[in-house]
Amino acid sequence: MSARSTRLVIEREVRESARRKGVWALVILTFLGATALALAPNLFDGDDTEQVMIVGPDGIGLARAFESVEQPTLEVSSGVDRDEATTAIAEGDVDVAVVLGPEPVLLVEDVDSQLARTVADVVADRVATTRLTEAGIDPERVRDAFAGAVPVIEPIDVEREGREASAFGITLVLYILTVVLTSQVAGGVAVEKSNRVSEVLLAIVPPRSLLFGKVVGVGCIGLVTLLAGVTPVVIRLLAGGDLPAGLGRTLAASAAWFIGGLALYLILAGALGAMVARQEEAGAVVVPLTMFLVVGYIIAISAADTRLGAVLAYVPLLSPMIEPYRIAIGAGSPVEYVLSALLLMLAVVVVARVGAVVFRRAIVQTGRRLRFRDLRNPA
Image (cartoon, rainbow, N blue to C red; front, side, top):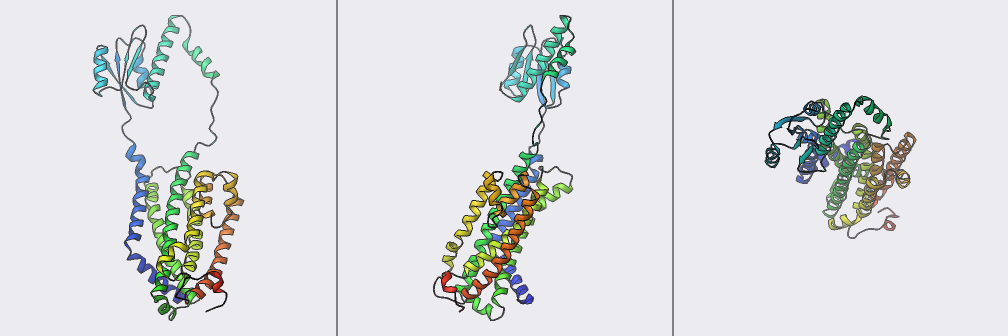
């Protein structure tokens, strides 16, 4: 295969793809989506200060206790009576009010909110401390006794939720991108064959160069799209922003499996696209490839950490969807990752050899849709 011929086909395919509005729309949407995800924590980090009103003499040190609460920040004000507190809550000036008396009363719109529970705990602590002190009991000893009775809670994996969210978003992008580019390769080959453009190109470049040049050219568009999605994340990281746990590892793994998976699917799409006689038939021949992508995507987001996911992670047509997800959530082992990657690379080599033969024999046969038995003998 002539390197120069392949390079010419790559350049031609890149130029053709750059003229398509759909390609640029995909790149822009990927960039905007990644930017939105990267900026989401900043956009939704608002002022978490809550307004608390105390009604009545604060003889139990409630204001100081409220000011010592770290999350959320409580800003304390004083009220004259219950009616004033009720009006302030109704008008949105105050979030919660505490009416002090023999039995403190908490006024709040949502009794099940986290704010209501936090304020209630602070009030209960101060009231209990005051009553224990009046009874001659050391509140600190009582508090230590209760604290020592509470078991220590140790989370198994505090970062799993963040990794799962990252894996879900990345897998979705890779799935959509692979489906779009696979259809583009098959459709492009079918169009050139039906319009006899391929015959003109074959007079200049060999069939292998035509196939692999198209695959690499379209693959470059995929990498540009992936780069558009990674750029906002990198910028946020360089700016000192926080990223979801495990996102860097997930991106690295996704890039490796995405490149291998994209090469595998695009070669298959190019070979299958050469077997059709009309452009309208291109969609039908890539249905099996799309089904593999759908199955891989569903397994990845629903059963990546199960035995089924562990087994299917070794299947080259499914691993580009499943393995990045398993790496993100830490469901596999280094041995699994290496073996899965090696099987994917081996599959790419085998498919490249077989696909080149299929493409060479099918691209010159026009007039009808071909079957594999029609390719037994070279045209």
